[in-house]
Structure formats: structure tokens, C-alpha cells
Image (cartoon, rainbow, N blue to C red; front, side):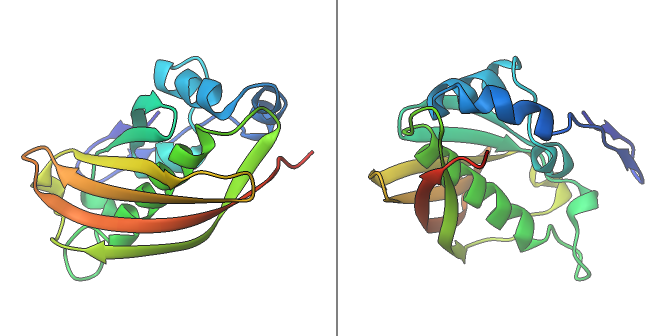
Length: 167
């Protein structure tokens, strides 16, 4: 995981190639439950951007994200890319939670609406992704990000292509 100070962060992660063989034998729901429970290490992007799954059920996932000064853009706020990335993850993982072993997905499109700015002192964010229409070729999902006070930060709609996992 990451070590934090006001001016530096050090990251370490598990090589994702080591997880691919295991991932191919698990349903999407089983894989996400393993990440939530800590029996499967998070992907490097989750460590780098400081988000993790906290709730998983078929067709719905919830992630917690901890924005920091390390996520700031040149105009002095958390970059919208962090919010977009956690929304892409939440909607994608919601889709993943419905898939059988050996089947994966990739984002085809994501549309994000930003509703309020995020600062390092905003506190933890919650990103929820939910499948709107499942399928074996294309999945449609929606997501939102809220503050711990319940303020809506952003919303998203996503289209995901279902595909076999790479060998």
C-alpha cells in the first residue's frame, strides 16, 4: 500500500500478471469479493489513486476513495481524472460482478458530469456503480460519487463491452 506524508507518497503493488491465472478461474463477483476482503491484492491503479472496494453484490459495487494533495491539478484542486477513474472503475466493476469465470469487459464509453470540486480536505469519497442493463455482449451501467456528507460530486453513464479474458 501507500505511505503518506504531506509532500511524498511511496507506492508498492503486486504484479498484476501474477493474478491473471487466478482471475480466470473466478467469477467477477468472487474476484471483487476477494479484493474487498483483502485475499486478492488490488490492481496497481487502485493503490496509486487510493481507492478500494467496500461493498460488492451482483450488479452493484461501492468504492471508497481518499483524495489527497498528490491528486491536485495546476489550478489547485483534485484533478477530475481521479473522479472519472473511480467512476470508470465503479461502473466497470459493477458489470464485472455479473460475469462468469473467464469473461471480462472493457469500457467502450463513459460520460461524466462533474457537479462540485474536490479538495484534499473534502475527505473520503464514495463511488457507487450499478448495472442498468446487463448482457453477454454489452452492459450499461451508471455511477455516482458522493462526499461523506452525502453531497453529490459527479455522475456517470458507461457502456461496457463483454469479452473473453486475455490468455
